[in-house]
Structure formats: C-alpha cells, structure tokens
Length: 254
Length: 118
Image (cartoon, rainbow over all chains, first blue to last red; front, side):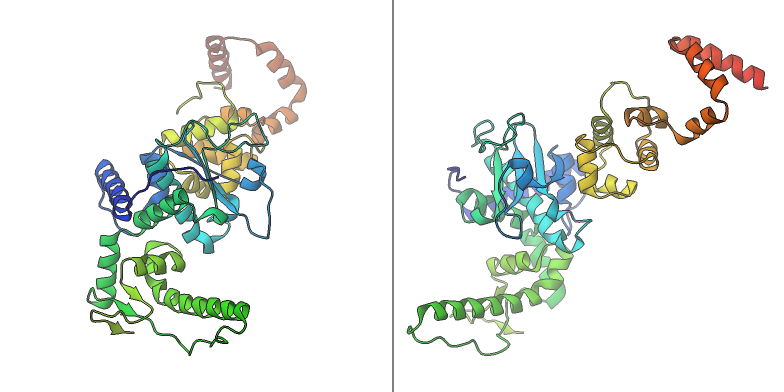
C-alpha cells in the first residue's frame, strides 16, 4: 500500500534521526555510542510496545515464496510495533542486524509519518476484531517513498554519521575514503546480442562487487550491530567507500 | 512484596509489571529463559501461561506474589498440591471451612495456626 507522504530531503531525515538520539541521550543521561540501543529507545523512550508474531498469518497476507515479505508493522493509535518472528534475534542470532534495522525502520515511520497518516488507515485485516495496522512494511515495497524514508531513517539512526566517521578514523587513522577493487575481472557481456544474458552478467558483476564491499564493511557492521549490507550502503552514502575511482579527489586503494 | 491489585489475565499482568519496571521484552525473556517470540505471545495471552518454574521466575523478577501469579496462570504451586495430597481429607475439609472468609479473618486463622505450631 503506497501512502502519499510528503517529500523529505535526506539531510532532513538525517537531522530527525540525530535529534531523536540527542533527546534519548539527554533523557537517559547517557552519551550515545555504538551499538545504538534501538530496542530500549523504541520501548522506553518512545513508549511503543514490541511484539513478535508470524505477520503473514496475523495480517492475513498470503506468503509467496520461501521468505516472509512482511517484516514489520506499526499500529499508530495503540502504539504497537510488531516484528515478524522470522527475525527473532535470540532464535536466529545471525539476523541481529536485520532485526535491529527493522526496529529502526519502524521508529522511522513513527517519527516521520505518524502525523501524516490517518487513523488506522492500513489495509484490512482478515481478523476484523483487531484494528488493521497503520503501516505494513513489505520487502517487496521497499522502493515506495514512505518505505525509502523509513529505511534512510533507520540507517541514520543505527549508523549516525559522526559515530561512523569516528569509527572509520579509529580503524584507518584518517577520514579518507577507500576504494575496494574487484577481485577478478568482471564477466564480459555479448555487446547486446543477447540482452537477457547481458543483464544476468551485469547483475552477477554487481553482486560480486557488493560482496567485496560488504566484506570490507563487516568489522564496522559488527561494531554497530547492523548487517554488512546496511553498513556497505551507509559507507557508500557517506562517500567513505567507493567501487570505482571518482574523477576528482584523492583516494587510497585498499 | 507487591500484590497484584487489578484482576487481569496472566499475560496482561506480566506485561504491565514488566513495562512498569522498564524491562525490555527481549531482556526479560532472556532472564526468564524463553525466546522473545514466546514471551510476546504469552504476554498477549495468545499462548497459555508457561510451566510453573517459568511463572515463578517471572514473579521473582517482577517482585510479584508467586501464588497469585500462578493462580492467574491457572496453576497451583506444586508444593501446595503435594501438601494437599499428603493430607487430603483434613486439608480439603479445612479449605472448605475457611473458604469465603475475609482477609482479616484469614489472618486470624493463620495467626492461630502459627500459635498451635509453636
């Protein structure tokens, strides 16, 4: 379901996430360090209740494919956040990063969107006794503006610019960007003779590059308790990590 | 020792008391020794209350009366059941007699029983 939410600049979202961390630190009398205590912030600073369930069953949304598509849902009126139980971080510790990202994402909806959404505007639930959620977050709808904004918020909340920069300096001794080179030559396409194959090869090369960058991002991801994918995206966004030499500026190959 | 004032369900009581003490769902589940998903479903009363040892552990962590919490969980402490089973006739008769007494009358009966033991 695509709610029309107003356009927000990336730096505005970044500022909102930082403000929230600032408030939290002030209220708790703590200084904010990695990993960001997103669970505590959600439950006790924002006063949202946290629950786990099989969200496809709960919301009556048929499961297509092997993996759940619905990972989180927010009920604004009753201040409830549900996370799909496939992300239970004690049952599946290797998904800790994705679990925390989902919490950050729901906090993002709460902070950015709750005032823009009508009361229980969510799609109908099969269990009509229960009010439908205000927002249902589906992986397949990650490109919608509302979802993109919440993702960006999660990224900024869990990996605040200043903390990431500091961690980067600690690790490398400077704040200069790094390039991660390809391990081997990319597979060559067929110069347009077989477009499907070319697309497949392009995607393969892209995945290979992503994997290299994620390997590089992993130690920082561990510090912030986020997935290597999330950290790779954040480092690229902060222009700390590059996959090719930019036209200008000095870079150090790693 | 806190007593449970509002008569509510097991799950709602645990959730309310847990939140009052600012214990997170996951943190509390870990202290009890269950998964956050299980704890979440119990607190929503979507699953029956857990085994006695878990209920007792929750009561300890939340500083609630264990017998009251067990009653909310539709259970009687196993030591109490064992006592009744050892002296079924006397205890059943005693319980039927005291059933319906007010809290202050109960206190007097207990006081008397203590004196007899001494």
